[in-house]
Length: 443
Image (tube, one colour):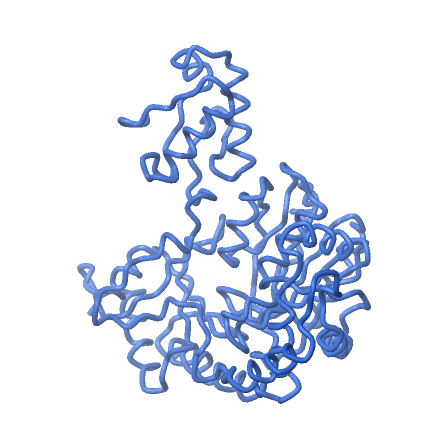
């Protein structure tokens, strides 16, 4: 059942650690079936309750999953082996359109902003005990949020969008609670949920965002929280429109105890309006990252929400990192106030590539999705075969398994690095890979 790997331990914590070590080292592969609890207890000479406690701990950590009589097995994407670590190696000479990075030519230079932040720091270096959020940053961020119709609320700063989402979930949920997540959706969130010991309830997505019937089903099944990508959804490019937002808000109004998190990571790179779900339930949060518009290495996101949620997040943050560097915050203020990024120009640049690829695929009879952002999603019948054919044709795309729980197969193409001259050749290659010639050839 486990090959040559031997699980050891006399205490539940030791048994759990032994299994987790096997998963982390690769000795226990994703999907590996674990011994029944009584069988393993007999081999180890311990009470079955000890093994049951170990398995429960591993489920809460997102390492294994249990499927009734089918037993327990290592998760296909265990928390110790996140999706980003399972990337396909791109051979030399193959065009890589797998990365979700922004186009570096559209990112602003940080020279002036960092120099200005250094001068500000020299005048009065920030010390312990000061406000964790710079007043100027809070003021500008709050004004932008007000303009986008985000309900009033305090402002916090986190180390990126995922850090904010994790802190909000941890502020309200406990291991075993269920979280409704987009499917297909951002792989990092799909990994984060089980890593926190939470259960993911998949919610289908169309071009307008989460499908209301799917959200209603998740709520009926006991979802304690809902995570929604407001726009530039990864991997489908979906954006929540006004009509869909109204429908979802009406639905959520009947579930006031559900925590709602809006992820607006696309702020600054999209030209579709924000239609947030924030504020319709008692507890809510909206997080805005600077990564896509100003640079991933800034590691700064603005978080707002109801007073209780923000108080819990900031209180727990004080006990850990304390705050996000005020020097970094000052640099972001300088970027904002200097107009270092023209959101309309950035959105237009990504839009030309994204829309151009979708149109070229449509001309070849291939359906694709991408209303906003830098990704195009192509539903396929067999994503493994399509990825392999495209790799042979000189194109590396991302298999949809990285972004789904139960959704149908597909592939993600990141257009941020595409040149106009590459759109048609890529569309030709995708069309050939999706519908190979008789005999299985892709030519």
